[in-house]
Amino acid sequence: MHSNSFPADAFGDPFEIDALPLPRPAVGYGVQRLDTDTLLDPRQGRLVPVREAGLACRFARFDEAHAAAAAWLQTRETGADDHHLAIVPLGYDTFLERHVLIYGVLCGQP
Image (cartoon, rainbow, N blue to C red; front, side, top):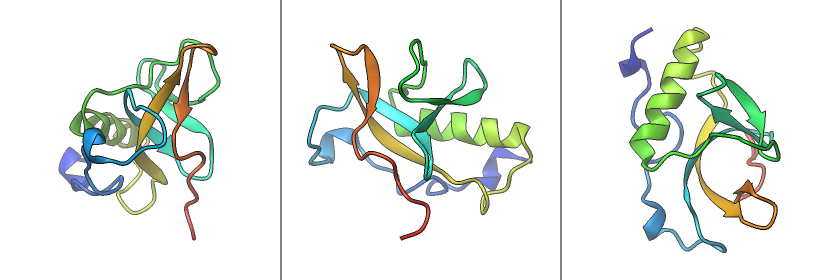
């Protein structure tokens, strides 16, 4: 599967964090599995619960998160229509020392 199999909006419409009216500050982008609280950790090569310590899930730019999601899906031979991933803004809780899903668990279906 080629990376072109995943268009720019395959994981949600591209966005700039600074342009969003967020309820808490964002520290970067993450790749969330819909209907779960898991994020893609490309270093571990798996989806990891957001509460897990040492999670390396933050991307500085939308296109970096997109490339990581596409690469991860390509290793699983998952197509653009059946991946259940979304790029989301991430916060960070310095007291708990972990990332925060600013929008919480996103549902795959309304």
